[in-house]
Figure 1 (cartoon, rainbow, N blue to C red):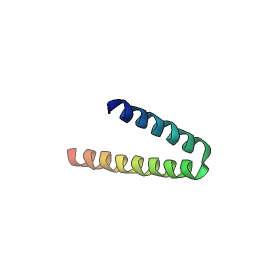
Figure 2: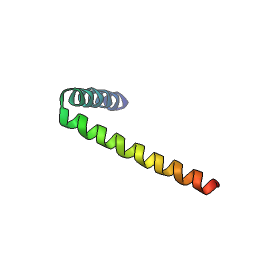
Figure 3: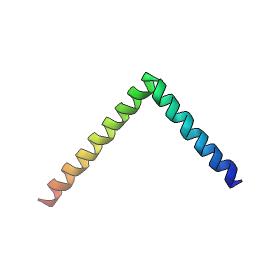
Length: 53
């Protein structure tokens, strides 16, 4: 059971890496998501520094 789960996870990671590598739309979507996360982190950091003052 654990072996099947491990194989599935590995195959999913490989498939995801290949899709990311060869699909421009997926790369753009991932980059957009990364930018959104960075913006949220910066908002949280700003709020934290403002609350400490």
